[in-house]
Image (tube, rainbow, N blue to C red; front, top):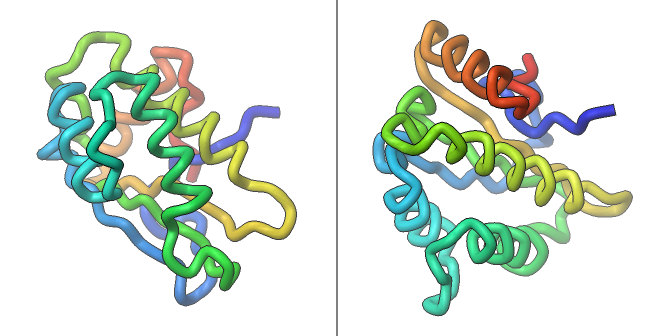
Length: 145
């Protein structure tokens, strides 16, 4: 069964006290701008290489070591506001690669005894529907909820 990690905001509420990291889709219109924005917002190390492999590694490290309050069991929400702009100027594969990385990293992180983690998407309903279709058309499982 496929692991879902993308949800419209509020579709899968976590416990009160979850750590929320806000990301802005308007600042993630290309792969390069996504790397810059996520590296800044999630405090990736200075040696972050600015490519998909390094992004996956740094995101994994962030989840496992860099989430404040992770021991509390409250969970983590990566909330992408203005999600309809996410990689809108990128190549056809960029959104699929991002979705695959997020699904892999978050699914691997979700283990018994660890807090939950999700990626929430916020935007107007029509843009979320369009993003869902994009993800599904690229074989990326889409958005649940």
